[in-house]
Length: 403
Image (cartoon, rainbow, N blue to C red; front, side, top):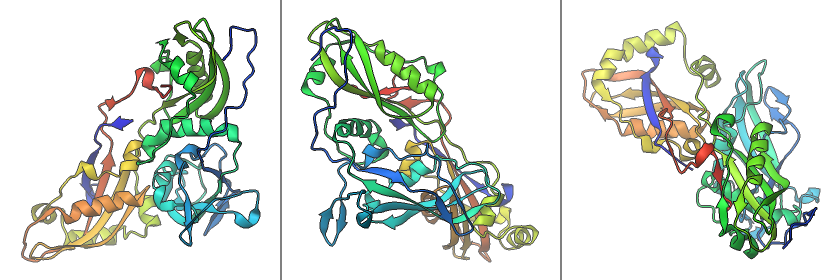
């Protein structure tokens, strides 16, 4: 999935093999040598000021962690989750706003290649943990790393990963299709998709389905089991129905083929209000803070002293792929000779937004002034283009990786 370039805006803070038989039994696919890691959520989230349960619906796509090995003492190791002594995990640290959105999401260590899984915090940014009575801070969630999945699921997990690989840059995966299924796919006559108007996109969260199917000798399709799925039931049902409407040219019957479909995520904007974010990030606010800024960094003087440089290419890549929008608050001083000094920054929902905004600030143009400026604040908004265009999307807003 490739999207159009996201726009970034800045605002001054003060402005705020089977014939046509009667029944087909699905048998496990041949064991593949591909190793696919999965993540299984542990119970509960611990925070500095409370706890909460983890919604079972929120999962990481297992296959995206394929072919990644953890390194310990310079040696590759594998995991056996049935042995408590060898439990390894991947952890995220974050805070939770009262509206349920996670913020300050970042890796919190663990034994499993966190530097190779930079897409995971961005994926979590699309989740909502539900309304909270108060903001939760210092939260940590851990997922156990598993490799003892059923061998017959290896192909399904790899198929899932191949379809969602755009969310994990640099991921290289083998083609999990059997030779018979590859040959059959070359004689496909008709692909069917659900009507776009009947598919609902989820903000910040793609939906996907990996299903088995058989191709009968007359070219018709018999749908098989739903092997991996994440999304709205009505969407998944519609995708499965469309799969059954595929048509192939007559030929040799083939069983146990796999296909996957994905519905791209809808854009997930940042809520207009930022008061809670300011409090959570210890930003000085209120009348005193505003007055201080008006005295030492008035809006008119700031507009004359600096020209903020917008660089859309700095939009955090993983967030852009998932349609996650963000904000960053920068606090800085400007010396009389035009040199800028960044004092602090915070961002929502990912630190990468703050890092991107800081890079743009240091590359902006500053002019000399008589006294310079101090205590300046700038709110930078990262906003997706709303022209509705996107590249590489197939009819119905659905993507198909069957061939």
